[in-house]
Length: 102
View 1: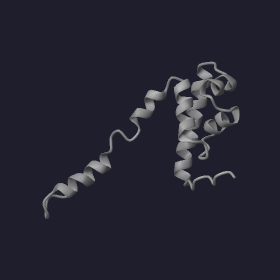
View 2: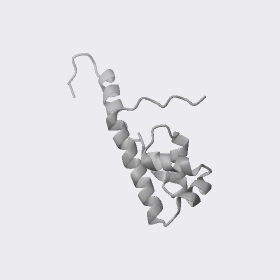
View 3: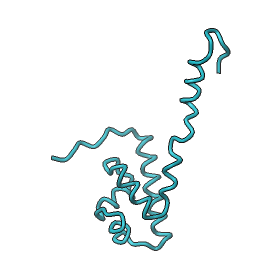
View 4: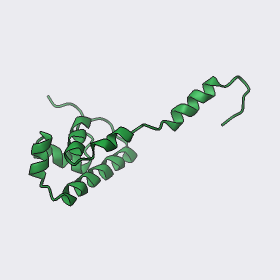
């Protein structure tokens, strides 16, 4: 029985759609066919199609495999690396009561 896809909001779908488009453009720039990329990634062509369309049902692992085949897997290391909001929240907790506000 297939899993129900995650609930995704329009702004999040926009991000996935942009990512998928960039991955497709990267594939085309490298002159790689969808068959070659899907074979190298160990996924089906329909899974690659989903990734390139920004389908929220495609797994993160599938996105990472496609990134790796395209030589872009180093980019994933930058995701959430600079957690500015988290650091601000942590700093607020460390401040004594009545301290300066951010």
